[in-house]
Length: 204
Length: 204
Image (cartoon, rainbow over all chains, first blue to last red; front, side, top):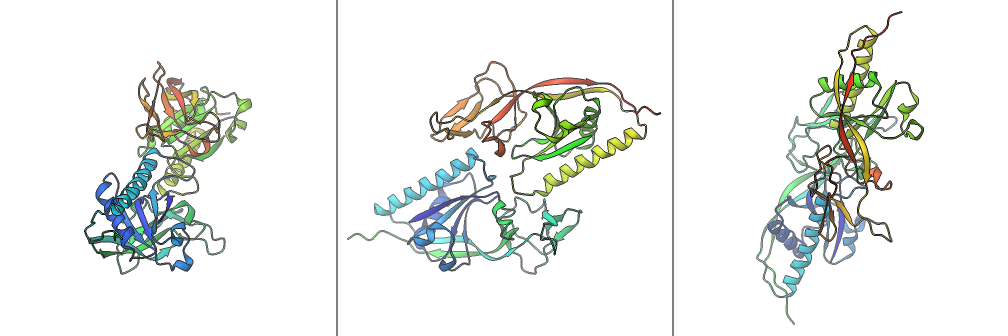
């Protein structure tokens, strides 16, 4: 099992990122972290990317996920973020020890957010420089439910750009520093419910 | 007059930075901004640096100050921070127009924070890498009053480093990204009161 540790400028709390919805081991760990960590929201995100296009380390291991914590500026250590990440890693190792010692983990449902698409910043058609920033009413509201007419961007001349889609979706990774160069202001995700079975280690 | 525009990862609100306590024009502008801007605190900071060692653009002009706004991560545009900076610049120009048109500005007192010294992060004596982060109880509390025994840092092994000085002082630029390489975790400042005279433009 590999965990790839990340931090973000977005208000993502503690997010456990998967390339698949079918890894019972990591989903059980998510459920375990959700019961143990109460200071920040603990959520599951699923990328719609095939393993052949995966870009984080855990994709080469049998089991694994990325642990994403935020908000923290790049180049800065925040003690609160450090403490949350340490707690997530310690509890993950804790779960593995319990599992290997024969503990039975009951099945159940886990809520997950599956990425559907990404939205770029409004840009000048020629220079490609930004025309707008994330709207103050959307900034830091990762995982809220966006409905038609909700503000998305505030242009530098003062106009509001609104959400025009019929389908309400959840914005994730709002205003992440490293995504400007990728052309991503935020992802849009659909909420889903995953069901995991009870598990217990198989003794030889 | 030159204004040098900056942003910081520290929770500095809107801070107007001076190399001197004797520029009546800029101190009047600070007073004007304090009466007009209510969404964020507007404060005056004074550097204890001679003009020969000055490192910002306004030091080459007859009048001027740096405008510092935060918190904003480096490499990120936040609409709230952009709007505050724009308001500060617009109101500065507004004051200059009013002054040049003959408006009388009454004198009075302006509160200022004068930098006394800087404090570095606890570091490994050999490698110089950090041993601790700013304590969660100090993070984002720029301009509070630090008293003996207050927490400063939380080490990566969990110990708290406390403020040991007899004199209570105000921490500024707490955990600013660009100051790690300068060996500054925060500045310590003394609060002072500056008195400015009533002013009116001299007509030819």
